[in-house]
Length: 222
Length: 222
Image: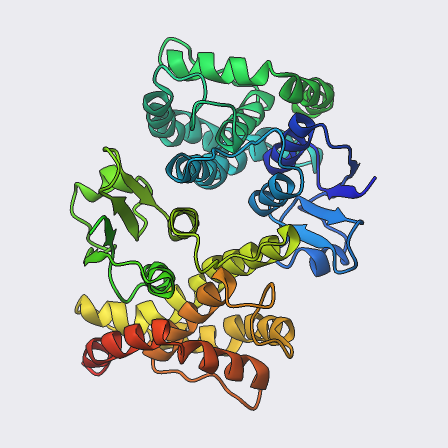
C-alpha cells in the first residue's frame, strides 16, 4: 500500500482525509500519532505539528505532506475519480471556502472548546472544564450554526450540486461535536441537523463513526 | 472589468492576489478596505473579516469570494495561463504547503509582530511597541528564516521548477518585512536573501512595491 496516514483517528482532520480516501476507494495504512505528544521525529515531517501527515511511498523521499487540506488536494489530483471538488471554478472556490470555514472557526470551537475538554483531556488524565464547554455551546457555536443553517438552506450538498470536500469538511466537525456528547438541536437548526445526519449516514462516514465511538465513549465516561 | 479586489494594498494577502493577476495579465479594480475598520457591509461578503475579497461581476450574485488562497485558486482555474501552480500533484501539494506556511506562521510574525507595530499602528495614530518588534526579530523569525533558507537551497523557485503560488506567497511576506524597515541579513541567510531579491525584481512584484513604498514610508517615519 502506497499511502500512510499519520495521525490520531479521533482528529476531525484525520477523519477528513480518511473519508476522502474511502469515497475514492483508495487503500491506506493508518499510523496513530498523538498530536499533543508527537514523537520527536514527527516534527521533521510536520514543521507546524499538524496532523495528519500523508506519506506516499510511490514517491522518492521526501515523500510526506502535512495539512489535511493539502493532503485532500493531493488525493484529488492523484486519484481524480470520483471527483470530490466541483468542476466549475466558482463552485470549486465556494467548496474551498466551506472547507476553510470548517477547518478554522468551527474546528477551533468544536475542537478546542468542547471535544478537547470532554474527551482529549480525559485521555490525558486531566479534568474537563465544563464552564469552557458551556460558553462554547451557548455563545460561540450558535452564530456558526446559524450561518451554516443559512448556507445549507434546501440543499442536499453544500457546493456544486454534488458531494464534495465542502461536505466532508463540515460534517467531520459534527462527528467531534457528537463525540463530545452533544446532539445538534433539530428544532433550532432543522436544515443543518438533517443535512449532517444524511452526510454521516454515508458509508465513508458511518464506518469511521462506528470505529471511533466505543473508544471515545470509554474516555468520555471516565 | 469583471474583477474587483477589496482590500488594503499594503496587506500581504491583497498583494498576493494582485501579483497573481499581474502575472496572468488580468485587469481588475482595487477597492481599498481597511481590515481593522471595515465598513459594516463588508462582513456580509467576508464572514471572518478577512481581506482580500474578490468579486467577479461576470457571475450572478452572490459573486464574492473571501480568502487569498481561495481567490488565487479561482483565478488559476478561470485564467489557466500561464499556470501558477505546478502540474505534478506532489509538487502542486508542496507549493500549497509553502503557501500555507507563509500565510500562517510567517504572516503572523511578520504581520502581527512587526509590520502591524511599525506601520499599521502609525496609520491608526498609535505607538509602536518596539519590544514586540525586537522579540519578533531576534526570537520568532530566525527559526522560520532558517527553515526557508534550507528549503530554498540552490533553487530558483520553491516548487515544481517554475515560478508559482509558493513564490508569490513567501515573497509577499518579505515585502511587508521590508516595509517595516528591515532587510534580510544576507550573511546569515544568503540563499533566502538572494531568492527574495530575485522574486521581488519581477515586474509583477516591482510595480506594487514601487506603488506602496512611498505611502508606507510616510507613515513609518511619522
